[in-house]
Image (cartoon, rainbow, N blue to C red; front, side, top):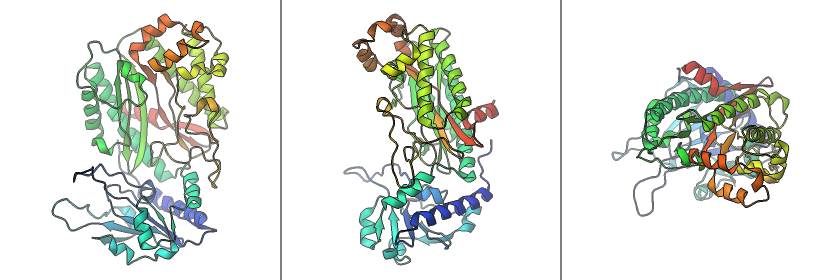
Length: 441
């Protein structure tokens, strides 16, 4: 599988970002933006730095991530400037200056100290985007993280350029390699720790390079939505595995989840049915104009699955209306994905930053916007057996409508989540994840 990106889409990408920048600055007194990559932070009373995570606004313009204390200067009608930090240092290796094709669109200036940036800019006419607000104040930048500009940029982050879509597909291809290796390691009797290391090796990622902390959950650990540990011992009886693990390409994230049953039975049947329902929902996306409605339809599908499986005697609509379905799927159906795993702007109604909140019973839903072309979002329905929530359900008026004998049989499996990354083009969904699995097979 290729991991190289064409330079041509990048030229278009820069053009689109420049147009968005000009529109975002219209009506302000700013001539441009100085965007900081960010800086390393050390642990308390230590000299060891936490893993560096680049400012996504910086990464949006340039495909480099491990360059703390670098900056980009972007101004309408000017060639963008990259201040590339390359300190003279014998304790740590400095990053090599980029020489790829994309650099032809940039004025790249090597700096050894960030004070060199201050001498080459006009701060009173610039907005600053970054976390080091004290630095921006000291330099005299006119506005720091201007809300109106950020709202505009965040709103349009939802619409991916061809360059971004290429990167997202490369990330999906990489993640799938890891998922296939993780699956094989699970069925070979590996522990969560073994599976995580197999995944990282297959994707050629260090742990800090993944777009989010991998979830490798065997058995009941899958009932913890963001389970964060990796047991080094293998359970006596490996029943199931839920793995939610991604990959990174040029700073763009793949967010992929799969669930496996070790043997045939009720849980394995539920995994198969959930996969079928997830695919049916993706196929039906053109029937929905808004993502919230898609989320509610998945709750209806999930409720129907619970009824048909004998887990509930309620009607499917009643389960959704009463909130019973929430106890089995307490998270949202999905979110925008891009430079960040949970990409920004998912609840923005417009460029002004007005929000469209999710329904009261579904506060965890991260995406409430209308579904439009060039968006990339996840579809990740779940079915969980979470002891804390089941305890609440058992104490509710709906207690008698639940087959607790079956529930008790399933608690040890934890839960199910199946997640794909979907691109909208010409009103139709294109599954970046499934296409990667198809290519890998």
